[in-house]
Picture 1 (spheres, rainbow, N blue to C red):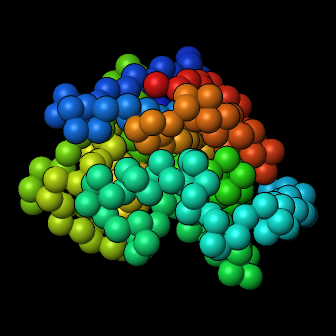
Picture 2: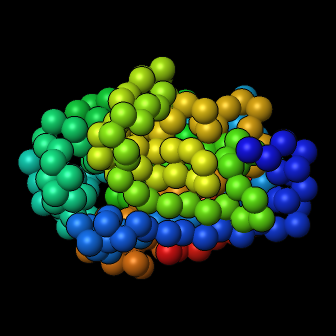
Length: 244
């Protein structure tokens, strides 16, 4: 892992990102894509833009309640694509739901979006508006050399991770997103704790997950909307943005 000062220096120079999907994953799940953006100078602590954020959350919740119902949500094309992907991975999406669907169902059940931090709140808003699932990582804690290299592969039997919320998981062939050294996210189950966004995080990597069959334009819109919301509520400068 790069030292924090080295990471900041790399970010100042402008950091590139590469993406790779292992061949055995491609054979089973052709068409996996991601959208990526890197931002520096975000403010993850406190209540940056809190009044405006609260208004946007309330407006978003109202729009969601007017647009969808619990009965019809599962048939929305982007939700259906994600559900179909879950089934192909051997996961029942009626029990473990795609993140965007879970957030929308929470709203439709009369609850509110969770308030966690400016960055997480921002991409949750983007998730329910675009129906895309996102992660955000502390870029200073990601392992890389000259550029960030992200890879989707199958977990090796016996690999162990600690997910956010101190959830320890022993893996067996799950899909994972990795950097050059470590797992960042276990598809469906969540992000690892070690690279999560913290109050002192200053530089972040946002990932938008594109499932097989997704229209690349939907993924492009997703990463753009998420990045714009993060800038709006947590500040920061965009250093890199691309769909792979």
